[in-house]
Length: 314
Image (cartoon, rainbow, N blue to C red; front, side):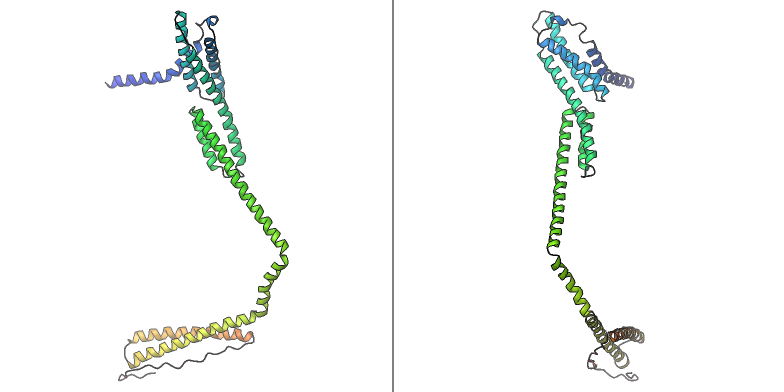
């Protein structure tokens, strides 16, 4: 059974390979047994068209266009013609209408193939030309699809993709033109506005500079004074926290010794840093010819303590 299957597959493969050759052989032998003098009207037109289509297969090959589709169509037209011719020779009623229609359709398809080949070349040149102006990614994709359809000899579909590519190019060009026009118009409007209002613009831009030059020292003093006041306020808060911590440790006994030392160290370090910063601020204020305004110290906060034996408030 396996041998029979292999044999059948081999025969089928050979048949597929030889079918186009058989078609070529058929078209090459077409006309040898036909007496042209007996052909009239549609018969003669069909005969000439089939011969013309056959001769164009060479041109198609030279242009790199596949011919399988045309060979099949020529073969069918030849079969239709020869069947009608055989009937005519036997004195029977014969019609060459189908053979003529088929051969004319093949001729139109051949011309379409030549046209599509040229159109693809022109489209590729157009895409290359437009690359510097627009994003041709979508157009290139349509071109590749058109080329694929052309290679598969679906020429009608090829034309659809080519037309879509040109429509996309026009759309992208239009969008680019609008964008460029808007940009140019904006630049012109801005240039016109500046040229007409240059004095007003110069005054408006000069005002902040003048104000800063006149009140620079005052502004700097205000900023430094505000920072100094904030630091002093924070120092007083931290001092109150230290007093509270001492009370909780020495009087009330609520804090462990380790916690007490950690808190007082943290608060003391912060107070020292803030005092250093205020000293620098005072120096800067002195350089500006202005002394720092001291804040009134708030009344010392008193805490209610429960006295604990053996410990005194430092």
